[in-house]
Amino acid sequence: MNLKEKIVGQLTESMKKGDKIRTETLRMLKAQILEFEKKGAAQKLTEADELAILNISVKKRKEAIELYEKGNRQELAEQEKAELKILFEFMPPQLSESDATEIIKKIISELGATDDKDFPKVISKAMPGLKGKIDGKVVTAIIKNLLSGAK
Image (cartoon, rainbow, N blue to C red):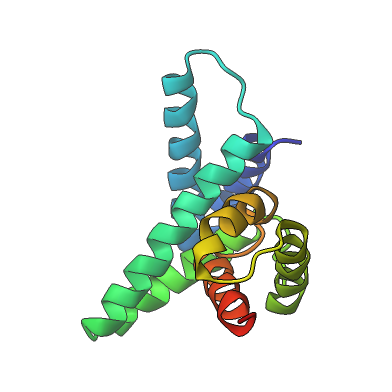
């Protein structure tokens, strides 16, 4: 079952239950998928496309939460957090920082990276395998930390 089918099924269920936040979040996600399909002109969505759509939505929610909390708008931040929780249900399982660190250590040793100048090589090798499984900012921080500690 692809992402769109899961969303449609859960959207119907949430509408029957009267879960307003879940219904709105699923409608938004469905609209983003339909928009992406129209741009692709009859192309079937791949798993990578679905993941990209989810990642964009998650990133928007995280940024909104941060802005609302800075603006002291807790009620809006809480709504965004609820929507974010719903979006995470559709995301693949996330890697822990320690698991990501182990993967990145292997990549660094494979490439023979020794300092910050090797950062672009390491990130370009690491991101394809880690994309969608862990936040890119976390990956960047891990790589910088490991390369600065490798001196």
